[in-house]
Length: 240
Image 1 (cartoon, rainbow, N blue to C red):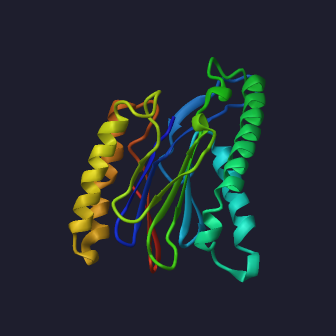
Image 2 (cartoon, one colour):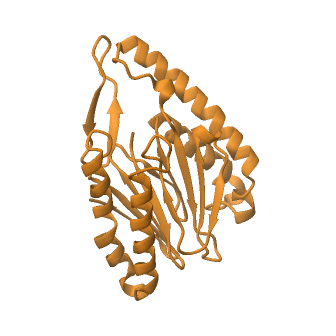
């Protein structure tokens, strides 16, 4: 288990993810869990300044998806990132998510069997992905998909949007609903803020929400994490 969430304002996207990662031990040892306190378990990955990807579940799935997205867009015509019409060609990316997630599960299960890593089965791992993009028109775009929903990507445009990765078994229980409600409040507060003060306020308000989740799920989610802000001038990235 791990956690990410995102909110959008007028022309900014705020992404937060925790740093907890499950790591397999050496052959013959059991797997072990731990909170990674620096940036070793990055769950928010840069495609280009205006385009970032966050994920939960198997780390290999996120890494491969980012590589696939980079290879598809960055070299093409010398562009730094995708056009919005490219990003919204969803069918291909949904199929890619399904394919890469299936491959990651297969490889992780082999490692799990080799290391005798206890009762946890990688095949039971839920995967989620979030594509966050700020196009030239500065209207934020979020695309969100879940393995339990066959990675059908939902689209979210404009300011005041909130995305929360699934935390309860159903994805809509506690603490999912509570975290979403708190994020909606933060989004309203940031939309009322002076633009010059918005990022500072976000840094004050968002990290404590990851702490809230960690208190409820201390073995699954860490209170430390990453905060990425995508804005018209580029991006800012902090560890907390």
